[in-house]
Length: 207
Image (cartoon, rainbow, N blue to C red; front, side, top):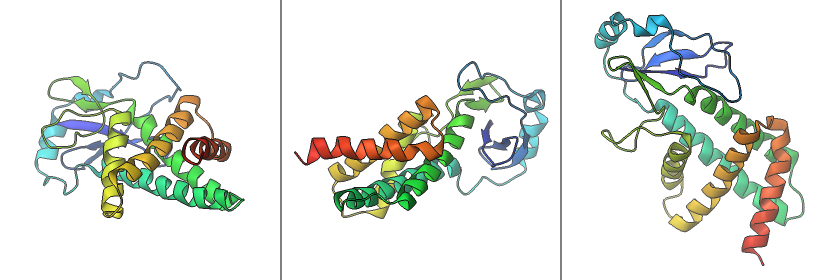
């Protein structure tokens, strides 16, 4: 069975069984920007957890975190679309920048715990954190998961939009996401990054 941490907006991340969504406890982790994160609490090595989880029904949504990631990225895409309109009208409002920063900060929380991967207790190995697109597909790291689940959510929200348009706005979100995560920019500073992204987009699309 698989176990992974989730950001609960608490001092310590929670650990959940992926198949049943059973809460298995919390993990005391010293988060650092970079470094080795292949550590698992000793109680996660106990096979009795698998027996306990086996008595629970399968979770209705075993991709809860993946779908949350897709929702956040689609929300961010809509904020960028709003920012484009505001920018072309001469003024990007602080409210739009603040909301975009909030979304990036929540994505940052998912990224933090995803670095620890997904613990396969039976095999005693780590696997990538995010579920694959289909049941038997290989698990994914954040960049691939963001592309897949972000686009999946955008398709659901805008069924009449062209694939090219959806990929275009998602690429802006993913670019800003990488910039935020690579430099660990606080959410208050993403406003400047958003403005720069809009300027880059304007140069490439409106000239």
